[in-house]
Length: 346
Image 1 (cartoon, helix red, strand yellow):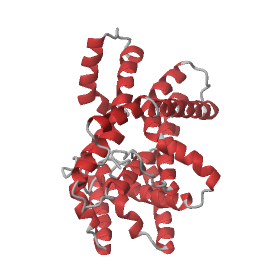
Image 2: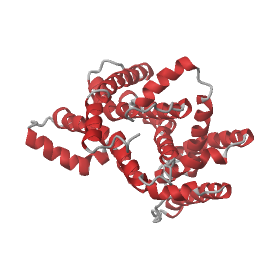
Image 3: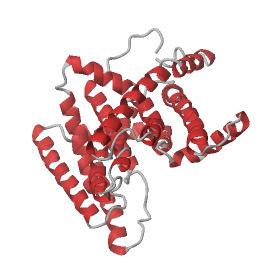
Image 4: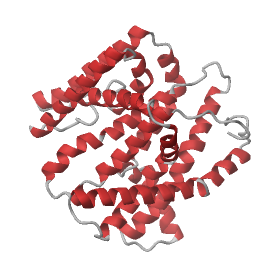
């Protein structure tokens, strides 16, 4: 990281990262502009795929570890502290002030701020738009160990993993619907954890163009089946555990990766810019969303929705660019220096 030439990021995966971030913001901004719940409930499943795409992308890179490296554990965990935890804390610190002053109208004192932040960090933030970070951190903690499993998979293991995951997703989705009781089994083969693990192996399963074409068709059918489930009111878990949404997400991931290979060099710069600051854009966008929509500058309906969302994205990118290159960068450098991590973080 310091004094080294950085490897060029793959624009194909950066495209997935950017699309995932943009889709989530478009999803979060739906309700303020459409009073008709029928519209939002059919638009949401298209945009919310950004969440499952992000989990797949996180798994794609998380398991790329050199398992022969003697400093594997130290290096992996410190990289997450530098690259994830420090930015997360900075944005949460801003969010904490925003919640106290803007949302709750509280008088902010140093003591009340620290008390509120401590409680929110341990509990409250996990109920906001930051919920996915808490699940992601739990998955990351296990990566130095589970990477041994993922990297040892043979071709048949990868296919079997997907098949078993699909079966478990089916059971977890339809048992509650058919028997009116919650499904008790929850682990790696269900929900966002499954997307996280599949991200690392899914491209190996769908290498051939013929396999990709079949995947795109089944992914489209999965999305249609999802809309049907929503239409008949069977919506529990459709965004995380449904086998239909699993197919839709996988097809979207593979399709966007293929699309990314065709991006021109001029457009790459924009993708890399958004990709580099995507975490910050996501973590700060809700604060601008509340403020901009409270101004009532944009009218209800599709025009106001698009205008408001684009404004939120642009302002969030500017704010993220500034914070990532000032406070967050300074804290990262200070942490590296204090703990002498120059040879660990490369």
